[in-house]
Amino acid sequence: MASRAAISADRPHGPNSSTDNEAVTGSGDSLVVARALSVGYDGTPALSGVDFEIRPGARIGLLGPNGGGKTTLFRALTGELKPMSGVLEVAASCATVPQTDRTRLDYPVTCLDVATMGALARLPWWRKPGRRDRAMAMESLGMVGLAELARDSFGDLSGGQRQRILIARALTADAELLLLDEPYTGLDSASADLLDGLIQNLADRGRAVMIATHDVDQARAWDLVLCLNRTQIAFGPPDSALDRRVLEATYGGSIVEIPGQPGHGVLPPHHHDHGGH
Amino acid sequence: MPDFLFDPLASGTTIRALAEITVLGIVSGAIGCWIVLYELSYSAESLAHGLFPGLVIAALVGAPLLLGGAIGVLVAATFIVIATRFADESADTAIAVVITALFGAGVLLALSPSSPPGIKELLFGDLLGVTFTDIAIAGVVGTAVLATLWVFHDRLLAVGFDQGSQQSLGVSVTTLNLVLMVLVAATILVAVQGLGTLLVAAILVGPAAAARQVTRRIGPMMAVSAAVAVASGVVGIYASYHLRTAAGASVVVAMLGLYLLAALAGSLQHRRIPARQ
View 1 (cartoon, one colour):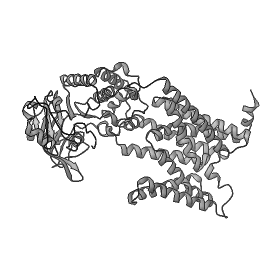
View 2: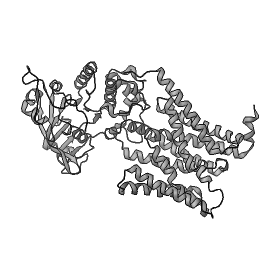
View 3: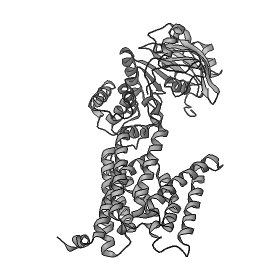
View 4: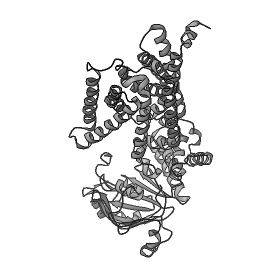
């Protein structure tokens, strides 16, 4: 089910723990609050010392090297991984928008079918998506600007269009926090501009969007950045958070600086290496 | 109308065989689509072969084949779980060893000099020997299988499309795989009497593979798959009547012919509609 519970390592998580933790955080309108959070696999933390807050309408860039904990954080937010220590309060319904190469192109579904799948997040297991859910899926397709492709096969679309269809699926789930996993990978600049506009549009409508990316420059345009490298390096508005020290700690030292743009235009090493999650 | 079509219908044997293959064709045509989309062909074939000793023992002691087959499936599934848990080999290798051993044990029993005649029907099936009880059992089990598929349809579609979505869509891959394998086992149990251990895998995988070549949505894929299965059954039974060939094998040969036609049609279709970039 879409995660709408406060999850704490100290107590069993349930519908009541949210009110218990209100005193800890004191911020009623936050979608997500993480305090001294650590998460991991088989008792070994993959990510620790995480402290941040997400409010509606925020665009958060998630920066970090491969293996730095971006995927781990996503899995904690959707409830797939439980905190090992600390507190993670998720008051929003979250939906992950995967990289399009994780989905199957030879699969017998139309774009409307894919957008409708999001409704399952809101329905109990015995209920099937009905007419209202399909209407909502059509609306989601309209919101991502692809309503006219509703009847086309998903596999026939371009990478950028598939990405937007997967965002439409998250919108049909009525997710208040969308987790985008490196959505710009493989997009041409026209598709990337469309995606920029869509993310802006979603934020304007009060949805929070967290975008995992390798592109530091791009993250500067968003409201907040969260830098992870197995632990939290920085969290805050990009102007104050993204200094040289933070970037070096995030990407492990050797930063390439582009001549003529001091302080800006720093590229992490292995910029194009997207493997190994 | 030509005698060619009506002659075979004068015998109750042929009519019962046609009824049985129609029921089996619809059920296995539908579930076959999920076997193909979830890439479970190997598991389905393993189950079909692994239950062989159960059938042989039931035939030897005069117990109902359905009971022997059910016990055979449980034993095979248990061995598969144990083998994959404790073997150093890959899961596939472990399953292959277990299934070949079980199948070999069944053949050893079946070919012993004391075996009653007719036991080789367990290998290739005896479509012309089905009784009204067999058809009724196939009808009841088949209806249950189709009803379960209908309930889980949207979740099966969503998770098969994107396994990573299971958490945010509130469905579990493990549960769905388990449900699917139980349904496959039930279908194999009722189909094995008509088609035999060796040919049952063909009707579970062949029609769905053919349907996948010529359809682009799940609903039509299931309809075409069931139609291909039933058509192969009818053509095979008529061929076996007129040409005096083995019924089960004739059905499988007809299915192969339809698959090749579908593959040809599919490749022509792909040439006509180039995928967008």
